Length: 127
Image (cartoon, rainbow, N blue to C red):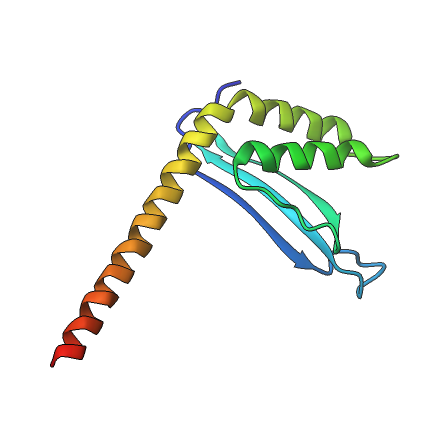
């Protein structure tokens, strides 16, 4: 199934206490979320605190999630998550494009902010 009109791609990791049986145990949660015209498709997996997920591109994040899923001896969500991963892989070229465009837009905004900051600093230094 090809996603229609991908609106946004969010990939993020958070360190937190996600295990209700062990509230002091910290884990990384790597989340991959695609908002498209038909709804939202998302998946996430947990990683030990000392194994922070390291990724730069959507394909890397998705492969980390897929590999983590296969490490579990038992998983009640394995079949569902395998289907979600396959769906995301099928749509990966468009996901990569939308993700990259959003990154470029954010970087341009940061660049403009800092260029304005430099300009103001120079003006204040000369007055």
